[in-house]
Image 1 (cartoon, one colour):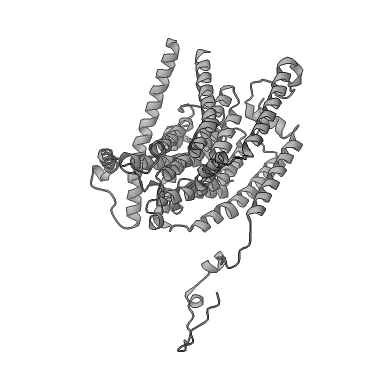
Image 2 (tube, chains in turn purple, blue):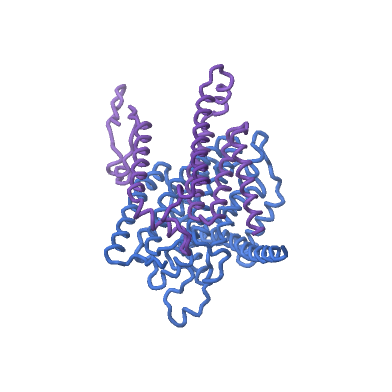
Length: 208
Length: 335
């Protein structure tokens, strides 16, 4: 048990420290790196309580894909300048909005954790019982049977979000040449080369 | 307390005996790669240092160690130094779960294949960090290309892994190998094997998908500013990753440490030799492709990943699932 608690405190101290660094660090790139460290240490904590599937999925989805996109955005945009303008401008709307959201989250956490602590049967679930099958199997057994509707709904919502994002960024621009792969591959010398009689002082018109 | 120290000592001993063979085989594999490349182009390749030039990579590594490490003045120094370390560490850490035989594995965990997938998807960080921290145009462009490429091809690799998992019914790597006792998955899932192989090429930035370091356009991509040992670490990490992808392909499709057929003269050959020969076979394919195929254009690369591989592997996933369901071949859950 000693080793278990040593590892638990090790990972949780790193998780808390890095989440503090995410919000206090001056450089935005460093914030994102600390966010990644936070994800990884939370994933390790998941693995320590025996939820190895959740831990690995956290690593794959959040660290492997979402944080890469975060890093992208932060590297491409000059976020440091925007951050400066938030604090220098007199009427900042970001701090009140952030406060409202964080107070709401704190209240929700209080309700959930309080209910869990003082009313035993609020959070009990008949499906998640400890047994000797691995938790990937356990998840599979309930996810596609009891909760199939919620699972499908979540999938449809994500699909809609994706279509919406593509629609928002998609625009037709004039004057853009599209390349057709079939045409490019099926070219041969007889169709690619055209001999023209060029008259003096008139030139040739090329249609594409 | 003494017990813990003993366990720790045993594990460290095991880890060292896993890492040293991997590092040596990475060095050998670089030699093999250059040799194959030379033979295809009717050259001799490295053949001077040691017998058949086998020590060429060691000589190169020695040269890199004694070279000066130059850190650009405008670089972000911490991230710049961290990037090759991240690449190298992630490439080596993944080997912990690769089974060389039924018992010869460092960590036989329940979610082995997810662990491999997670670690290989983290590999992109070394490249992004290196490209960004160099604070220079070519490395940054290389890093952006590489990140987009690796994220795109991971999607189809994930779906191919789900295809195999449907047939196995377990995420444990040893279970995946044992499930192929009668039939290697390369036969029923042959299209998936081909797509996995091509995606592995893209995932490890190998030619014909080596756009992040396309020397004609980007000098050397994300490693332009690196020199000395830090460059060598990128390089070794890359080859360790290639070997890892070969090992993954041989576990998922070629039956891992199983012999071809379970008959007398074949099944007395020890399991690790089967595993190593399968990895080497796949690596030879990697090397031949590097020598033969010209580089892709970037838009063609993206089109191949998203418009061809992703829909095709999704369709094949549905086909596999329906086949298993209708012929009642779904793996039985033993609770």
